[in-house]
Length: 387
Image (tube, rainbow, N blue to C red):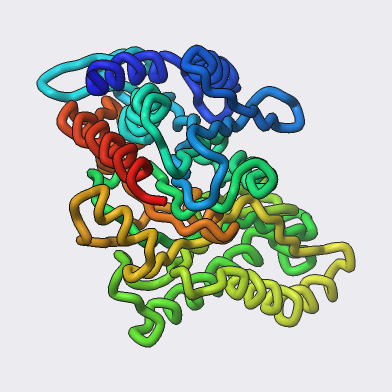
């Protein structure tokens, strides 16, 4: 029965076009009403504009040691992607369930919601908590306000299970991320007199070159962790914009860069080194030409890495629920590092594969959904039999 319910719920969830740039309230209000219909109360934690919300609900006794089932409700855009199917309508074909968010990660949310009647009907000795967030895809932004209120709303959980697509294999670690924007303000002039100006693009290029040098150092064997792929912290520049015409020394240039950091590495160290290079090496020469030239760094987004110990109680519990202790890591980030930072042991495990996530004709297999439904059944049994 849960398999039938999870498919129907997945169809409903995919029907809400919760791209991060848009509101997720229609989906959240549907989930709220669904839970209320089953006798489960929940709280909505809104953003400042009240255009988006997190959802928090609890089932079972108000005691410590429960399990948080956490997932994000937003999805990435479909703009410009060659979809052959309607992205915001569920299509079942050849054992696959297609639609934007099917793998990342509405399949997991549907399985969690399908298990609610079982959780409600079971004599739980420890609670299960539902934590659904917004704006994960744009920097794990929404879940932060949920985590701020969590200690006042629920007793200390024993585990948070983040349902990102891992083919239901337990993942104990991922890298953190720091995304930054650098603004370079130069001094424009006619290109025939280029030495009398300050070329913002050239100064940005020097900064980008320094980032490349830092990235090469981070890849050295002594900084590597073989559990990850790539096995080292990485630095890359993804966007650059500057200049107006070839015969004008460019007045401004900006570029965006990111650090994907191993859990043991503090990515701010990259920014600090680049800032020191800008202040001590580039700016003196720039300001000798024109005093109001500048280099400014602006944070875009950040989230911490995750490194849950294989011998921890949380890891052992997930291994029991999954039937596997073949722990691994993933390259992509999750909200898991933020839950872990908040003192809640966290493991990533969910249906589907990130090989399909963010791509056209995204899908999760019927088999994976059924396996996740069975995982929820085992979780209910565990919460009934353990104090």
